[in-house]
Amino acid sequence: MLIEANIDALVGPTHHFGGLGVGNVASRDHRFQVSHPRQAALQGLRKAALVAGLGVPQFVWLPPVRPRLDLLEQLGFDGPLDQQLATAMDTDPTVLSAVFSSAFMWAANAATVTPAVDAADGRLHISPANLISSLHRGCEAEERQADLQDFFGDLCHEPNGSVRVHDPLPPWVPLRDEGAANHMRLCNSQGNLGINLFVYGEAEETLPTRFFPRQTLACCQALARRHQLDPAHTFFIQQHPDAISAGVFHNDVIATSHEHLLIHHEMAFLDARPQLDLLESSFLQRTGKPLLRIEVASSELSLADAVASYFFNSQIVTPQPASGSTTEQTRMVLICPDHCHEIEPARQLIERLIADHRVPIDAVHYVPLRESMSGGGGPACLRLRVSLQPADLERLPHRLRVTDETVERLSILIEQHYPERLELSDFRCGQRVRELMDATVAFRRQVLQ
Ligand code: SUG
Image 1 (cartoon, protein in one colour):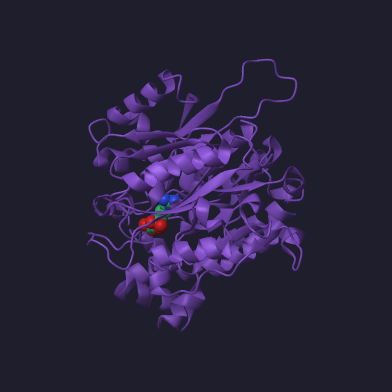
Image 2 (cartoon, protein in one colour):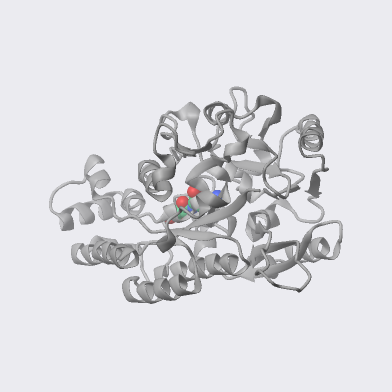
């Protein structure tokens, strides 16, 4: 039996809206609006606390320090801090925003993860994503690799550790990688028999899209090879170019999965009928259980409403009852952004799914995530899933595990260190920027104390 744990990345004190997300309409629409870092961090933490409260092991990662002044310098903005910031603000505010970005909060883009049971060498494989499609995210790869190595500690020590943290794929355009946002693992309820599905936007011959596709087939194939996945149980499906053009910059904006359940929009994939048939038969053969594939028609939820509501970015979890509990067990719970409640077709779709007893979703929680959603990130974007053996789970850092006590402690520290509001002009002032950097350092230190 494998346990599914979630790692959520906490928003950082410089959280703001830079409009930097490639092909990401929410990000573009909120460019340079006022942001609320404190509220953003608390909203993300409360979502993580909700998952932990359902009995699912939940961890957090701490924010790295921003701005990346080293990058600002590499891009030609040097001199004393005040001058560096003022010149960048006056001549290229996009670059200034990029080095302050808190986009690391979207942990689903941190890495692709496949469990030990799927690999020929019996190890859990993790590839940090190179994230080279956008100016503000490419710098996350190295930091995340270090975070992953720290997080898994002894488990990833060579030569015999049960976890292997790879280097990110080389930062070359044909190998663009956005991590778990474009990967789905379908499996039985014990998690020990599964198949892997990679979704890419661009292959060698690809139809034109309005926005730059962020994930390539060559990248997905390389990930599957290095993770030593069985080719018979590994699938590669292309995203529909019209979906990318409508603002579906990652597969997890148009498809979601959990155990034997796969929910996707009819416009998610390009000419995928034969592959989906094969996926279904492969799943049945591998697990002995049918895949429950739900295809949502455009007539029920338009592509535009799918993007606006982020329904497909809902998180699906299996609650784990407390030991000794005698109440009837809820099968699966949907954690949706509250936008889904406001957008009528999305709300009706959710109600239909819950009412349908063949669908194992029994309940919904609408969570307020407005700060993350304004950058184009819903509940599922904020977490990275890792399926592992119970013994390995016990070896993960307790200080980063979400419990009532950690939530209380983190909330106090967030209130203490995070600014209530920010606008881009705050990044022009050297003293203010030093305060923000010091706040992150102090926050990290106090959490880890
Ligand atoms: O990469 N937004 C992120 C959102 C990532 C969502 N993740 C998943 N779908 N898994 C992105 O586009 C916005 C930054 C800004 O506008 O400042 C941003 O980076």
